[in-house]
Structure formats: C-alpha cells, structure tokens
Image (tube, rainbow, N blue to C red; front, side, top):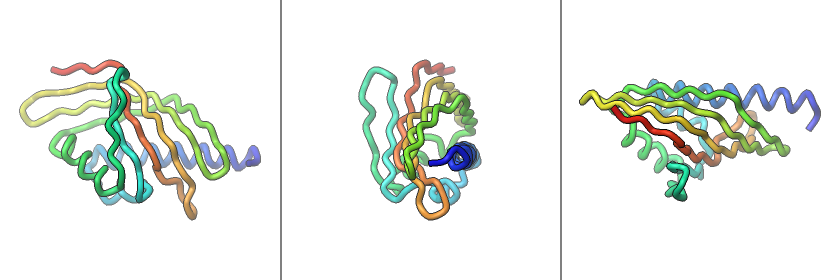
Length: 139
C-alpha cells in the first residue's frame, strides 16, 4: 500500500470502529450487522482463559443482544494499534465499556479489543473480535 492508501485505511478503520461502538450502544442491530463479515468470529476473555468463540454474524448479534440488549451501555475505544496488510488489518484498541442494567447492577470493564478487519467492496468489515477485560468492576 502507498502512504496515502495507509492513511485512508487508518481513517476508514477508525470510523468503522466508532460506528461499531455507537451502533452497539444505541442497539442499532441492523447497523451493527452491516459492519460485520458474514463469518465474523467473536469472543471474550478475562485475560487468563482462552475465549469461547462464536462464529457467524447472526450468532454474534444474538449473543450481543443477550449480553447487553436490555442494558444502557457506553463503549469507548482509543489508542489504536493498526497493522495493515493489503485488504486486511490487525487492530488492537484500548477499551473501556460500561453496562447499567435495569436492576441497578453496573459493570465497567477495562481492557482491549483485538480485531481483524477485511476490506470487502468499498468498506471494511469486522472479521474477528476478541474483547479482553483486564479489570472488571461490578457494582
């Protein structure tokens, strides 16, 4: 890739991840689905155990709905480490996420998203995501 293409890809990836967070927090499941590859892989870890991976867009959306569909959430990402290789990108994001449930329970997690994005057509699609919480506060 050229330097200009790298800058464009960096911009597009950061925009795609910002949309991911907003779509998840606003429960825009169709918008979130549009950001994912059909065969997306999704997993979560506590930093010590291997993540149990869910495979497929519909399966991933069903899992996300079951986890946070009834909660108010805020996902914030920053400090991306982006490694581009043609039409594929490996990205690690620092993340802080918070979920507040109807019963008053709240969970705040601190950690990293480790992701693989693929460029399909004219857009980046999320192909793999592992959320690792290094610290989890429950109130």
